[in-house]
Image (tube, rainbow, N blue to C red; front, side):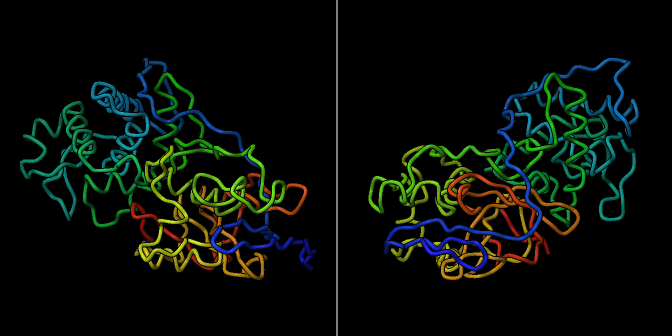
Length: 359
């Protein structure tokens, strides 16, 4: 290994295989967070007259509880219940409104449902339980809604002009569900709070496997994805599979089958061209779950091969939190890391088909 001026380590690349690349950005470092609780189970409502949530009235709490109850009756996951509360917050402020707006003057109720026959009668739309039930049934019919960011899932049902209209209401929905349900769901490091990602924290399944540096650049170091264990590219491809619903062998997306032209996805250097060859979208805006692509030398990445990571969280101050493997110098290389990064540092963001760039 050869020391670089920035304290980075250059790794030997073996043709036809994908290795991870040591990566360093001189920005704020955030410690790895532990895996969070499962966001799948349906929550049961626990509310009484003494229940209080700062910033919300008793009317709003009652309507949120009704939405959770409707979700439980339909066996809706906790994530789905949060999405339902989020949409109602964004549409009516969790109030049963007897009026609409300019684009929808006939909209009514908790979800501002239109008088177009799809949402029942006026009385149905004004009934919190019925309107919530109808929204949830429509959500459950959206193919792959669990893999979408919450705001995009809600938009697939409501079809409002801005698909990101509900994004700012997600923290409030998490807060309300936490207060009104029988579970504990935190905004920190929790899959319930981080949309568009099937896992949370260091859930990489081969975190204890030997690296190619320990056993040599051979098959013994190759993961089921066709990359070397505990490299940046192997973690990123694991997260891609996970988000697309492939969480066990045989995995859907491999180094050897990702590109339709038969070429390997390759090292971090060629991931952008791999995305282009596959026809998946790319852009300049971070979306949770998107792959972060650093061209060689960008932001302190390896000057020959670059680096890849995954967007874990997007902040309001123009930064995002990325997660990945092999992003620190020895002795902490080939381990999980999180790091807060300015949006302008990466070369591109590589989106999944369930994501899109905010315009």
